[in-house]
Image 1 (tube, rainbow, N blue to C red):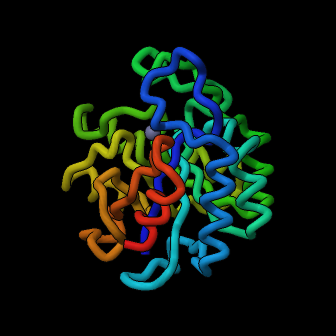
Image 2: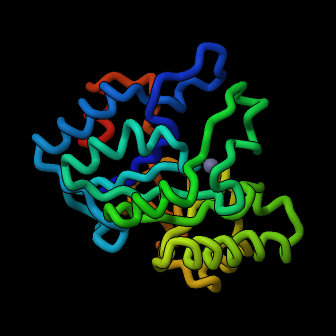
Length: 223
Ligand SMILES: [Zn+2]
């Protein structure tokens, strides 16, 4: 099985950099409908297995375009999805990279996240402020990992089981902190299948690029 990593589902703003982060809405719909027709299952983390025709959809950074463009498609197919939220930036924007990507991208607010929870979308933690976890002092990293879980659980009233390392940045110490905080799954940006992942706290993913054709996406699912 494979885990796909999405960021934005929407049209990139004209002057945005890193446009591969944006999968256009029609394309996203085409991709998911195709998987559905080919009998792929959209699985939850607890259903991940080394083999089988399952795909887990993950969305980093909790951008509002998830609600507008991705969620309707996911709902129509009764698919599962995880949205990774930088908990201190709820209702704000991508403060950590808006200069680099030259785009201010709104992050969903608590009401919108609560709506998604009601609709069965899984909420995961993406820390509090989206730092490089190996580059800040360990006590600060621990706070980012533990307090984000607590904040999301308090505000949304559900258990937060999944974690996603910002920038994919992790080392042994950080992985231990994530385990100790009570997360059951954690996702990296290292390319690979679930079978190739060293543990449930270092799950590899495939970056779904907005530049891909449908054929390329299909190839990534099947190979
Ligand atoms: Zn991120």
